[in-house]
Image (cartoon, rainbow, N blue to C red):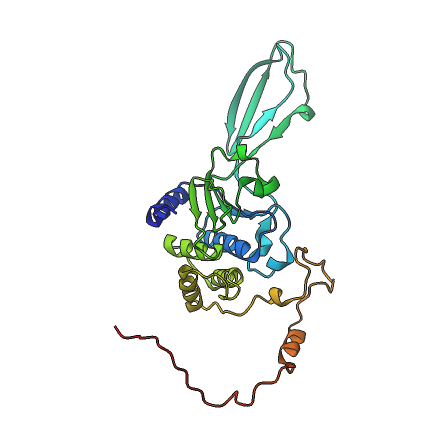
Length: 303
């Protein structure tokens, strides 16, 4: 990655000059990717930014308990383009087009030519095309095509793209590339970004990010980078707890969508889960389990 101080400085500049901000994930993002994207959305929203978040399909069950998941859409809001008024035209129909101001109302005046207007009000059409956001964060996508129907790459020609990922398959696209395979999660990158840009980190954001880090590192049992430990500590100081996301304990079929209201499918039952957790294990503890033990090692902590 580029020098991070320079990266954050550029990001601050782009954020200051962007009227619209988008955050997108690839198709069916995992818990880490969605937790990171949602946390960035919540932080920017709390700062008063015009921001939207989207993923190509409806979010999966695996991510449905994250705070803010109801804000995720399947289309992204960008800048609204110019209003275009269209109507049929024949030579001689129109003498000139002008406008008048009537208090707070702008009137577009189409002055008829010598042949008169050949169209009626019903023939007038109004279009206001949407334009891609000024600034777009792409979280956890290895390539632009992973965004599916969200964007045609041509639409991004005037958009500043920030690429946040930790996959070795990432193609390194974007104006700001925050991709490192040394990092164990997207969530730790987002946490570091939020802290460094000075945005407010509330409990909801912190809990989302800790869930994301915990998922990506398999409860810190798999590859875990120093930054993951550092960010986890900071998030826990804010009140986030290292309890597993309840949805991850639920018996569901991976890749499923949230169940319809009233359905029993994929419902988390805390009473049932607590009962199962307290049930006796089939493996009994050894007789000396509670006996005092002495551990010896050769590690020298001096110096």
